[in-house]
Image 1 (cartoon, rainbow, N blue to C red):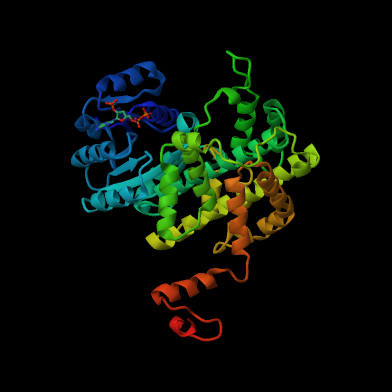
Image 2 (image 1 turned 60 degrees about the vertical axis):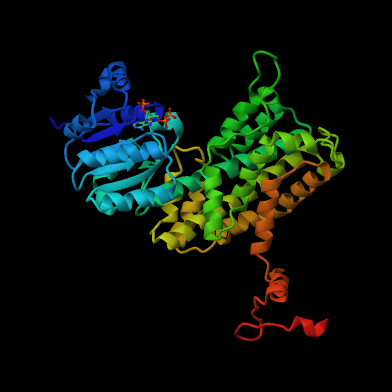
Length: 476
Ligand code: ATR
């Protein structure tokens, strides 16, 4: 009996929540299947209101779906995803649609799409952001795949996505791996945003000497301005939280070693391959690595340098409120750079992989349902709507003027960090990028001279066409 218009395979937390979200939208009947059938029946029993159609085998699952069959896979990335795809492909028919809603590497998605297309099946790699809560109540969804697949899948995904300003946070990102690429960049930007916020906290705590509670109030205040975002909001909550056991601020009880699941590393690896500087994201990934490098940190503990003095650095910071305002500006400027770099990576990948990606739409679908949701994304959408081929987000009029306002405090805050021994790798690398990108001439001229000296790699001249080589031995 084919009565479900959509199916979900893989019923761990994300899959179960997505299935419940789908079932709760008018017009959807949802088939569910999991390798271990007990999970399938447990979900159906726990949520009778969802009226799930349960299947104990992939064959039953295929029979329960109306055609073209549409199924969303929510299992671990890697070999498990390949296994499930292969099982579904064996029981599905040409024209059916298999969606991978996991965090696949975009190159795996490109490969899988090509393999399934050769069998007449549609394969869609869809980035789904927002964690368990988003899956249940409305995620931001970044699907790739063919236009044909989008025709069937689009309305279903629109029915479950988060909504911002009345519009669903989903769009057809581009063909094959475009959706998973954009999801990867989303995660990379999230790393940069979190690192920037952590640096702002470090400066306010250890240069300005504010308490976690006071910094929570600062973040609450910032959340009413240009920095308004989910991450700023939850940062205030985390900083304001008191540990029930010790009565200390919880942040002081948490071990200072940051973990990761690897999408930040993927972003940096891909960007290096594409030749796009994503320095803010890279510093964020490296900062997590430094925090977790126990042996190096233990060995480095005695090295000389200024020790952060918890607010006794008056000469470096001036008056506290003035410093707080400067850190807000520095955070905003650095954030603009990190996002601009992320969008550069999307642009470069789009030309490398032949994707037609509307960057304004990407900023729009990140406006709700995902971790980096923020008011500021509207400014990005506007910039790309005004100038769809905009070569550098930083140069759009709004950001140009924001950076003009912010750059003096940005420099002063970084100087305060240098003087007090508080590292600001993401703030500093963002400013370094900004100062390089706006320079008329860079010292790369010297590097070209060095390359020609030791390897006869040749150089170009500013006053003539062609490649030139100098006979360096003649000077020695
Ligand atoms: P979470 O992190 O939310 O727990 P996950 O680890 O990404 O989820 O995915 C776990 C899901 O993948 C489960 O539904 C699991 O099925 P079981 O309940 O039978 O363990 C499913 N899964 C993992 N490997 C699989 C495979 N090789 N074939 C089919 N399903 C698989």
